[in-house]
Image (tube, rainbow over all chains, first blue to last red; front, side, top):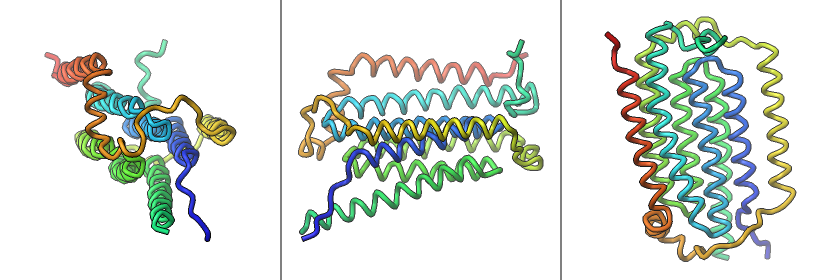
Length: 105
Length: 175
C-alpha cells in the first residue's frame, strides 16, 4: 500500500525563503516608497511563517509568541511609516525614494 | 487509509496555498499600480493564513487576517488614495543595472537559504506542546503569553502607544 507522507518542515521553510527573497527583490527594485513598504511587510510575513513552522515541528509555543510580537511591531511600523509618507508627500510632492534625499550629505 | 487521505488533502492545500502565495507576491512587486499591489498583498496574506491553519496555529491565522489583511492593508490603501501617484504610472518601471545586480544578489541569498534548509533537518530541543496540546493552541498561547512572556507583552503595548502618538504628531499640520 502506497502511503502519503505528512508535510515535512523543510518545504514550509523553502516557501518562507522564496517569499522572503521576493520581498527583498521588491524592496531593492521598486522606487515607490509605498511598494517598498509592502515588500518589507512581505518579508516580515515570510519570517513569521518560518517562526510558526519551527514552533510546530519543535513543539514549542515560543515561536507563536514571537510571531505575535512581529505582527505588533509591523502594525506600529505601518502607522508611523505611512504617517511619514504623508508628511513627505506634503513637503516634497513625491514619494519616489530616489528623489527623497534630504538626509544625503 | 484515513491518515493517507488526510495527508493527501494537507499536501493539496499546502501546494495550492503555497503556489498562490508565491504568484501573488510576485504580482505585488511587479504591478505598476500600487492599489493592485495592495490587493495582491491581501491575497498573499490570506494564503499564508491558510498555511498557519495547516500548522495548527489558529490564533495566529485569525490575527493574520484581522491585523495584516484587514488593518495594515486598509491603512496602505487609504494612504495610496490620499496621495496622487499618477506620475509613476505614466513613467513606468525603469530597469537599471543596480536593480539587476540587487536582484541577482537576492537570488544568491535564496540559494543560501535553500541550502541551509535542505542540508540538515531542523534540530533542537523538542518542547512539550505536542499535537494534542496544539489542538487547543489558542488557550495554550494565552497561557504562555500571560505567564512567561508577560513583560514583553506589556512592552509591546507601550510600543503601540508610542506608534499612535508618533503617527498623530507626524500627521499634524505645522503652523
